Image 1 (cartoon, rainbow, N blue to C red):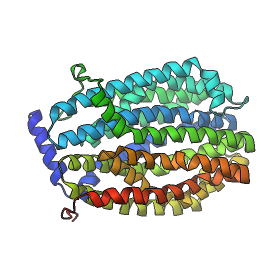
Image 2: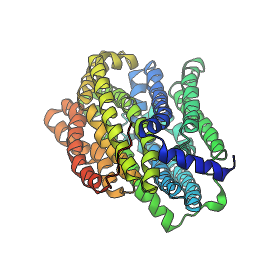
Image 3: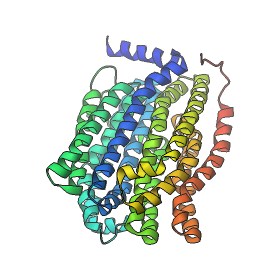
Image 4: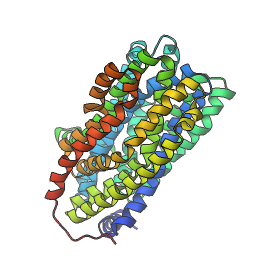
Length: 455
């Protein structure tokens, strides 16, 4: 089949397949991708936890740097992916191809900037992120190696998202899962067999990211997917503004998550020492994993949303949104019940220190209490982002980890000490939910009322 014929077949598939079947086909690979990706992020915490509480804390301190790298990748990936998907839906191939190449190039350049800036200020950055004198050496060892892969990590996130927005969710999954499985295998090999300690965990992550990058880049040159070509790079105002509009929600969400994590590390370290940093770091990793299935579900929804919005099929956008919110909420309710019942056991799996278990188990149970609210504001953010409502999407994306979490940490930590740090996130979740409803409802009402196609 020629590429034009394959693109026409994909257009029919994206605009005529019943919503439940389409979202199921696109979301299952992305759910697997997200869960396995977060599983190998947790693998570092698990295997490093076998070393010491200080090593666990050091890996947690570097988490904001990982979030910043991911923030840049998703900024360029979602910004370019949303736009090219809408253009494919509208049949405008040239602009879609130019955006694909531009988004990739921008991500690689920004990743290079993170690499250089981080290495130049490594020690100062370690302390700024919340490292104490007892963990600063491990923090620097881990972060230095992670930074080496920053350009490849940012650009592989872009390729993954561009493939997903074109409907190639399965190949995007293969690229991510291959690196994740490799990481899980390399962690114990480097840490224990080769005796590399914390540095071994970092090298396992870095090498795995490089493998994912190569696989995903290869996929962008095959089949009906848009091919990345240097002649299509357009670093001009038009495309950069489109990346900003579509990618700012992801940048703010992950960037503010990094800032709030830094604040949490500082406050936890001041109020409870290394054990508190380690306990809250474990909780953060567990929450990222708990949300990964929802985010994967939403990432299967996003190409359906942007593609059909570009094709003018607003009824399919609304049906897809309702379908995802309903089943996303039900899933999170189930997950919250199970995780709350076994909160201490979950933390103990990563670190057997009684103080870490007590602090982390209590915080995890509180965060699970508001976990089901994540479905509405996460999927609302993704819908608004996918249809080009960048300002509203950015506000919602900023709410949970920034607009409300940072003030909650500052106020509650002052009033309640370590308890305030432990309960700040659920308080922020409630406020984010209340903000999301009116911001989404007005846009929802503006979409035309096409006949429902869910069956």
